[in-house]
Image (cartoon, rainbow, N blue to C red; front, top):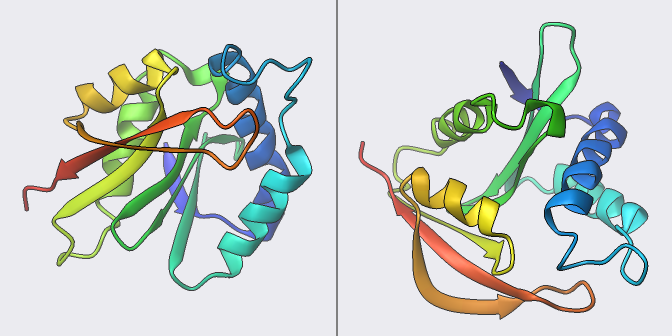
Length: 157
């Protein structure tokens, strides 16, 4: 796995990876017939985040340069994280997770993220990596506005 900062030229491939996984992993949360993946909105959000100096966005690539995953962080928040479906079950997500954690500044000792309540696969992944539910929740901005659960992780440095 190669991790590098994401660029504007990565965004179409990054969003394609994100869409493919989201459609499958969140099929019960966002049925495509009624709530299709908001490609343009997500692409615009990524563009804005790449332009934001507080956001650090990354892509992982394979030896051929194909995007295999993505991640983004802001301050102590993990904003985005995912891997290409073709890599699911290979350990890439754990490698990407560990590489992303290494990018946080040394003064950051607690991280947080949100995950869909109805995404048990993702929740199992985060918990396996040591993340724990905080008991706080919110709702996503995307209809039908499903519940997001907050998780946190204490870094041991």
